[in-house]
Length: 453
Image (cartoon, rainbow, N blue to C red; front, side, top):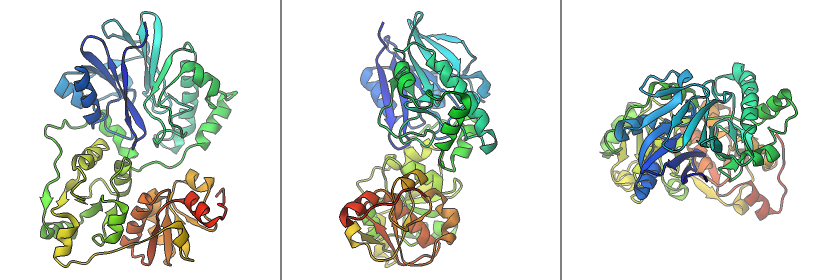
């Protein structure tokens, strides 16, 4: 039998894939569903499917599980590791346990490394493996990171990951590999567009599986690890306890200017989600820019403390659901509302407005450059003599940035605009933002980029 219809549900912002498996009788299995179930529900409705099972491969650090929501609203049975000690009703699985899906079988395989209680789920037709949902164990071209439980456990978990990958690699070559983490995920290391693979392909091409021994594997995996969002530290426990069930659609209450001013006086933060050009043309002083795009939630959770009330500034054509759902997906539930009427309403009160200069690569003034990309991005090619400080570290280290005229840059401009507003909040002035990235500068100027740190 060939594999049943399997629908990948890719979250480009978090770099993850949830999987919806059509069991052939109107029922479906969801693997690693997120709390934001909009994409999953759209596919299920289109296919006439009811989610009967929701399987979580591990206690996720980068998003809240949607399994609890599916159990409450769809009466789905939650499948997860018994070793995860989840505090809600679920069917706890141990190594080798099997679940009859009605013609197909799901077998639990313990594959620790990314987390202690990590399971992979092997989908079987009789004795024949069709594919394996590997979560954060074996992923396309690599393996998921092993430092989420602390630096003191990174090597121990990397060695467990080595054993888990080799256990999975012993499956038949034709077995499909359906991981959760992929390109763009801070839980995984490699770039690349592929979201699935096969055991045979991974055995032939995955550099970690090519490591001759555990020591080499550990060294390669650990060397690939960069920084990750601060909110990762709290989501695992929230997933163990179980996210609250959402009974009403997410709302973005309208707040007039006086109400916003009162909230700001009490410690709230403005998050401006408009496009870069709009923010540059005029934003509320002290606002944090976070242009709405797939990566919006990652930077919201990384840069704004989870207990800080947030007021949104948006344009009328930006859907509130695309703001609130991604925030809830990462456990950020302190968005208290939006500025009614947006920036036109703020300007109408003759309140102060801040602006930020945008420059193209051929317009860059002779001034300092602050590159706020991730370390791997920076070392792959940066402007000569550019200062480097990752955006995720900027709220704590803004005081270390020289108080001189600076052009802030990233890969395109969105993160640079965020950085510029964070620097403005810290008292920096005379800032500009580069529209474009390092390669655009090199093309425009004919100059070479520098590599390395």
